[in-house]
Amino acid sequence: MQVTRPEKKWKAGVLGATGVVGQRLVQVLGDHPWFDLTEVAASERSSGRTYAEAVSWHLDAPIPRSARNLVVKGLDPSLDCDFVLSALDSSVAGSAEEDFARAGYPVVSNSRNHRMDPDVPLLIPEVNATHLDAIPAQQKNRGYDTGFIVTNPNCSTAGLVLVLKPLARCLRPREDLRRHSSSHLRRRLPRRSRDGYPGQRHPFHQRRRRKNGA
Image (cartoon, rainbow, N blue to C red; front, side, top):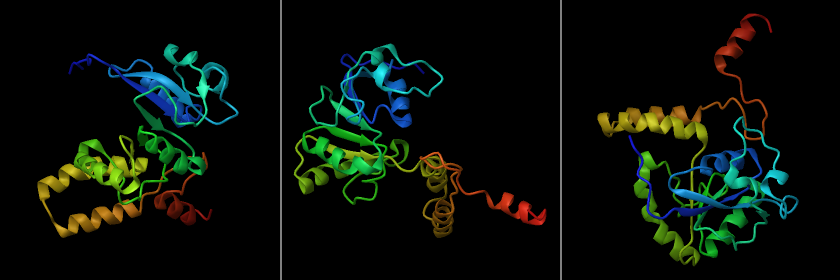
């Protein structure tokens, strides 16, 4: 399928650009058909240096040429971009994302802070794009003008829901499907946390270790 390039690219900024998640966003935006990466922002210890100087790059692919010489900015909502993608740590993401939304920026967040806010869409576009209809209510509730916050779900949840959506559409509102899918989501066991610590072992491995006397 051929992707049509728009006449005008949208200017994108990345908050938390020096972290691992931020690096992935920078990589994806490096040569994107719809977006130009124009701003990278991070903590004060990184601001003022070029992105290539400030980042400890962990990805296999090299830093995109379009990002190497961008000067890292602080978290002041005065960036030259049409919207921001947030990969900020949860210790700072909540207030920083609100500041950007209040200043008129659409904020698409990978952080957990606003995921459970009742007026913030928790979005998987292939599943619940209509939840974007909540944005006007959010703007009214919070006094935002053109800005808003949209979040994505936990990574394991996103993968499961993409599979459950067509099943739910085929089977329609069967109570047992809703009950079982909810139970499955609650039992998710991510192998590793975002902080790099080992996740819970799968029950199969736990039973096997007990059987072997470990």
